Image 1 (cartoon, one colour):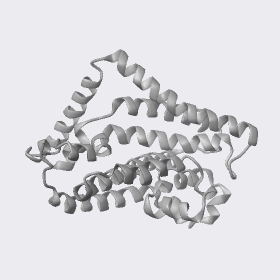
Image 2 (cartoon, one colour):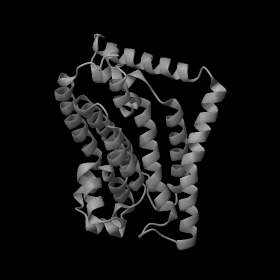
Image 3 (spheres, one colour):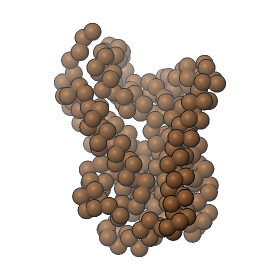
Image 4 (cartoon, one colour):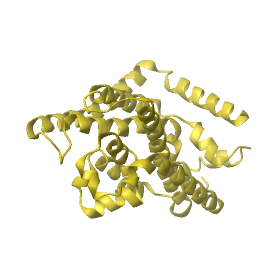
Length: 267
């Protein structure tokens, strides 16, 4: 409990530092919101003209995106330092954490929060959910709500695990931005659409390598029951909330092994 309180205090300090210049923070948050909204508007207008992407209509697509934005909003509240970890290694800032009497991963997870990105993505995710959730035929009873909440937690853990994994790679290669760009950011762009529209190779990567399919596609399938789910084992819909736990534990184990290789990059 002591470490948890320290973590909460650290997040509060991060929030206060970000909000010292409130107008600047508000403008930056609005910029993130507008940037991400522009992509959604383009997709929305395209769907109004063409009707569907695969078998997915406009509201189902917005619902798929809402999960992606909501989970990422939480991810950047907790894992911002891991998202930018290679620069921390390269600049020697990781040394400051090594000498502190707390777990290294614990410090990184609760050391910083990207409030601006979190607010921008989170606001958009909430809007998309409110617009679409009542129009896609989901009955929001208690079991469904519990599943949805577990999916959000699982999606956060999956993306957090990916950040931990690529951060651990920095102990071997120092610079991992290019790898992360290919396997995280590009896969995240793909995850906004039903994976069934992609080639088999992309589908395999999104299910078994960088499992973004378990962040929003398979959870959405559990709630929407689209026909293209017939292409995949039905059990994927049910295990989606647990994939995050398994992946996070695996990433944590890899981190524990990899951090032993750390040697300071110096000045």
